[in-house]
Image (cartoon, rainbow, N blue to C red; front, side, top):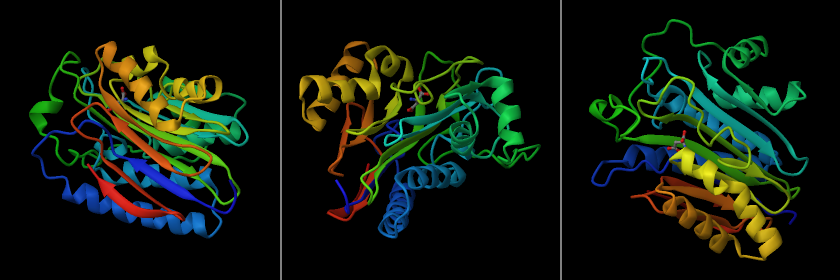
Length: 293
Ligand code: ASP
C-alpha cells in the first residue's frame, strides 16, 4: 500500500513485573517519533529498521548491543538479522563478538556478500573489513540493561533470562522490512545461536509481512516463528493478529514464551506476547503514536 508508513519496534519480551521501565518507554517513544519522521521524508523501510535497531543496540537499555550479557565462558556473543521484504534480500550474523553494532554487520552481509548468514570468526573478520567499528578493549562498553539485575545475568542457561530488540516498517513505496538484534539468553553456552539471525524464525520480511520475534529462541525456531505467520496468512488466509497468536500458541505448547511485532502491507502493526510483557512502540501516518510494556 503506497503513501502510508509505519514503524514499530520492540525491546524484548524479557519483562519482569514491578520493575521500572520508564526510561525504556521514553526511549522507545523518541525512537519511533524519529523513525516515523524519516519514513515520512521518504526513507526506506530497510534503512529505518536498521537505524532503529542500531539506536537500541547503542543505548545499552536493552539486551542487545551494549546491553548484551556474557555467556557461560564470560564472552559476549551476539546475533542479528535484517531483511528487505520487497527485494527478498537478507543478511544476518550469528555468534558475533567485538562489533559495536551487530545489525550493521548484518546489513553489510546483505549489501556486500552473496550470502545470508555469516557466523563466528569469519563474521567478525568480515564485519571489521566492512567498516563496522570494533569494541576493542573498552571495559565500560557493556552495561546492565534497564530492569535487569546482575544476579539474573550470572546464571546458567537453564534459567533462561533473555532479551532482544527489533523493528518492522512499511515505507511510502509500500516496502516492508524487519530487523532484530540480541545478546540472547543469559548464561548461554558459547556458540549458541538463537532465533534472531535465523531468517524465517526470529526475523522475516516479504511482500505481506514484516516480523521480529523475541523470547526463548529455541522454541521460535522449532515452531516456525515469523515465517510461520507469513505462511498462515498466505496459504491459510489467517488475519495478521490471529496468525501471530497461533504461532505463539505453538511456542507455548513447546514450553517457550515470548512475543512478536508484525506488520502487514497495510502498515497496521500487530503486537502479541505470552510473556509477562513486551516492550513495544509504534508510530505512523495512520496511527496514534504509542509506547507500552
Ligand atoms: N530470542 C532471543 C534469543 O533466543 C532472546 C530474546 O528475544 O529475548 O536469543
